[in-house]
Length: 629
View 1 (cartoon, rainbow, N blue to C red):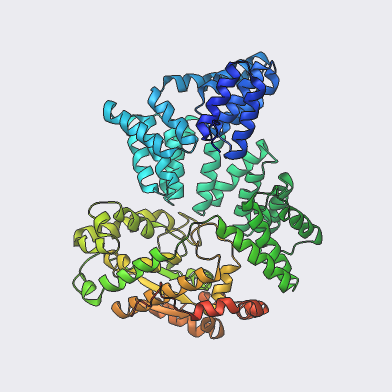
View 2 (spheres, rainbow, N blue to C red):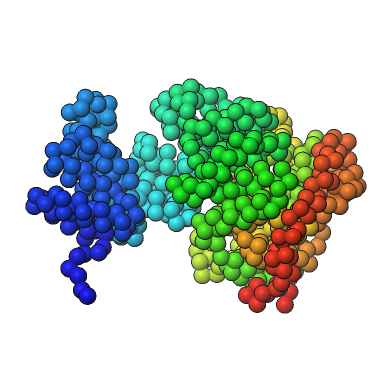
């Protein structure tokens, strides 16, 4: 049966506005209820609700929906005007001034760009992009238009494009503080940490008390391993807002990393108490190896995890935390149940597909042959400083890093994102889109490869002038570690730009490593880790690709078996040092702990539930053929 009731989001919103203007406010409210039931919340819905309440003579009640409206869409001019009036009438002077400033800023924008921002915040990115591109075609580049495009690029994973667009915006208006802050955020996301901090230093010279800038400055400093800089800023912020759960979480993470375990525990506990249902602090506690949850904490986690009111993102943090707590108590069946549930919840938030990785690996095996590298043996920067540690997550690379980091000629440094970032940048430049990866590598000249190698050394230099993660702590050392595990996917690029770098491939028992990934809730970078099938397929792709690199790059890679290093520690250490061209130093034996041997077989507590993982690791599905076939 046909209906004359409109069903699209915009049509329903317009209908509610028409009903309100006609004095049919109850009908308008019913339309808004229908709108809210059919679509996710968006700003215009709450703006219209605010106007309905004003029409009903309830200005005090109208403030909340207008506030909700601008929190969802900060470009709703009507909401800001209403708030400026309502705040002023209720004596909220500071809030009224802020709302008036927002009105002034929005009124100064060209109408097309103001509408584009509004469409972007309402989730209509394509319309927003069309509007700003049409505007720029007619009027030239505009700072706000470039910001819209940068936001769209960032939201679709094109951080390189977002960075370039924001650089253009700042070239047009170097004093645009919001654009500079957004650039710092993009640089932080791209792990260009030194560049991000440089932008924030400029901002803080202008406004030293700006809270969001100080928070990001502290986060960037912590990511750089510069906790002497980060922790005092976090402390100042905490004095201003002692019960900010996100801040308490960040402080807990920083304290844990610096070894201040009890202080980290306290900060995590305060964060969990400050926001009921906040799962992330519990996961922070779970990552402290010596920590054991109390029965009360477990009961609280179970209560929150079972609540439909708790967001899925917090629920999977709670699931992984409960799984660890139950594993520590030897309650393995219950523990596995929570690992299973947590992985399912996390996987549901991702859009991971293994096929693109597998296709690229097959192309690499086809394109990057011995002859390909032989014809380019004079390419690249001659430095032998980098030591790349590659492999799958949870394979034991931390121990290998700790061994090498004890050497007087090796800096531990960070997991640098420079190589993956360079690969993405190359793919976005001509003629790469036509050639794809790794086809584009054939178009690189000797001079280009040398330049890329020198750029890598230059951009990582600020992190390798000290020891044990303390930037600028001492004189530069001969070598430094890049422990980005996914660099195994880019050993072709590494060979072209840094042919004298060392590569250490760390492996462990596939079942132990696979289940180790399944137990781990990764912050970023491992979307394949949340199902046994995805883990197994990624493992096969990794093994096949590494076998290929060993064939076509003989002598470049040292394969290290984690269990063998633990069982014969000194021999394993000497083998690592010999490969890296380093003299033996007794300090490199210090990372050994008897607990390493005990951990090797911990997965066996869960063996009865791992048959699907065993089968998946043994299988070779048609859609993921071996690279050698």
